Image 1 (cartoon, one colour):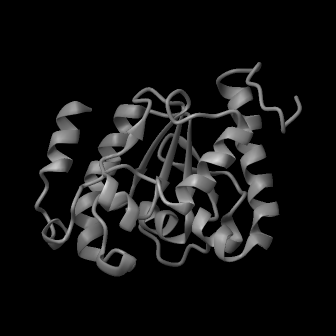
Image 2 (image 1 turned 90 degrees about the horizontal axis):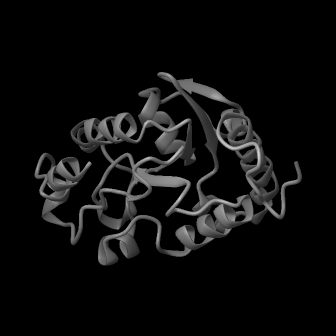
Image 3 (image 1 turned 120 degrees about the vertical axis):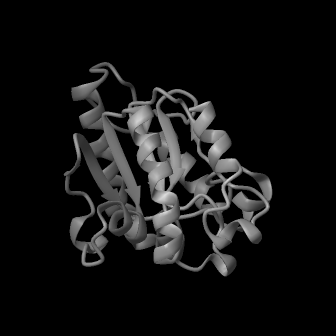
Length: 194
C-alpha cells in the first residue's frame, strides 16, 4: 500500500495533476472490512490532503459514528479519481481511465468484505456503466467482483436534500447488519439494535 501511495501522490497520468494541491490517495485501516468509495476530492480535501474532510465528510463521519464505525478501525475510504477536478466538476472519461487502476489495486490490497459507493458517479464509474441509476439501486446489495457492494446517496446529496436522509439511514443499517453477519456478530451501535 505504501508503494501504491507513492505512485498516486506522484501521478501525472492525466492533466488533473497540473491543478491539484494534493493527490488524495485514501485514508483509514489498510485491513478494513468496509471500503468506502466516493467520486473525487473537493476543494477542502485538495487543500488539506485528506479525503472527505469538508461538510460532506463531516456528515459521513456522523453516519459512521451512528453505525459504530470509525475510519481508523473499520473503514478505508478512497475515491474514483484521486485529484480534484476544477470547480468540482464530474471527472472526465480520460481522468477516470487514468485513475481507476489505482482504485482497483486499493480494493485488492484492502480486500474488504463490504464496499459502499457514495453517489451516482462512483457507482457508474466503478461498474463502467453510465446507465446505472443511484435512485433505483441505492439500498440494494450488488456484487462487484467477489465483493458485496451497497450503493448509497452521496453525503452532499443529503446536505442538498435532507429528505434523502431517512432512506440513507436504512441503507447504512443494512451495512451494519451485514457487517454483524460477516465480520463481528457483537458489533455495537447505539442506534441499531441486534
